[in-house]
Amino acid sequence: MEKLARIIAGEIVTSADPGGTMKKWREIFEITQGELAGSMHVSASTISDYESNRRESPGIKVVKRFIDTVIKIDKERGYPVIQKLGIQEQKTGGFEVHDFSTILGGIDFAKLLEATILSNEDQVEKKKVYGYTLIDSLKIITDFQYSDFQKLYGSISERAFIFTHVTSGRSPMIAIKLAPIKPSLVVVHGLKKKDLDPLAIKIAEKEKIPLLLTEMDVPKMKEALNKY
Image 1 (cartoon, rainbow, N blue to C red):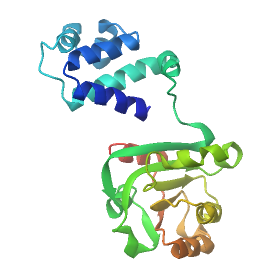
Image 2 (image 1 turned 180 degrees about the vertical axis):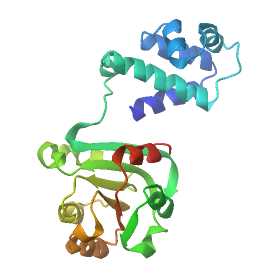
Image 3 (image 1 turned 45 degrees about the vertical axis):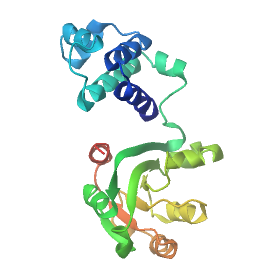
């Protein structure tokens, strides 16, 4: 939903009539002022004041809450509006893509995941990470289509690939070696260092891609990264 969220946010922030733009999107999602107010935990009069521009132009936090809420309500209804708009969640092929709204340095990224750097440590601080792709190593084997390849990189290739359900780390790194486009970093999730195949580290070193290892729970990992 990030693409849709960016579209809505861009329209509201750049509009000469931000309140009217909020009203337009509320009506597109077929949500009443009362429903929106209830989900945002504000009064209906507050929503009315924003839409009529009686209040100061909404700040970034208000706009984000508004967008999160209309998308949440549509999700609860089974995505009727989002499907009509032709924008659906990207969860096919065993991977999820998230683009950051800011840039993370490689060291900061590693710290967020409480990760151990296994190869090319000297390269990590030079790396810039603009997002991440969470890849289920088991599902991607059966669900991945060649047409999905470019989707792994979101809007920019300078990102981290995080592989879950990994048995040795060899297969992900072989796939990275064969791929024409390389990520900035590769993270293997859930393994102990002693269980990682030495070949995975050798490939990472040869490709000059930092290889990281983390045991952080996936929900906690996503929560930490999705703040950016």
